[in-house]
Amino acid sequence: MALISIWRSVKFSSAPSSLLPIVAAIDNWNRNWRLGVIFECNVGPGRLLVSVINLDNDRGGSGLQQLRRSLRDYMAGEKFKPTATLTPKVAASLWAHFASVQRTQSARSTRT
Image 1 (spheres, rainbow, N blue to C red):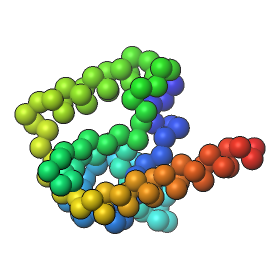
Image 2: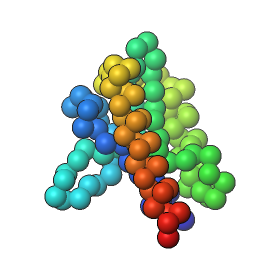
Image 3: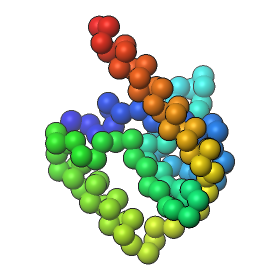
Image 4: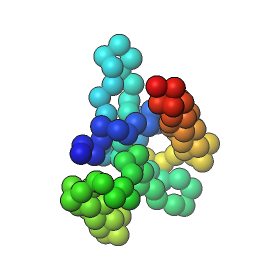
């Protein structure tokens, strides 16, 4: 099972250009949106590492387990120092867009 084929990405249009994804998605060439699948940032005094891939998926296999372990090890280490800083408002706008995309897709899948 592919780790990324069923997940959507986060649209970075409201984020500063300093927010760079660790794992990016390639968008449609007509839109060319900046999209992130895994990214890190500072929000207030905290550091975040965000993954739209469900790292707790039981069907993900050894590849998913390794990704989860690697991300946790990275966050626990000294190299986890995000350079991009988001305001709480900008961070919330990223989640709001992602949640609306997820709701739209859920509605589509229930119609078929």
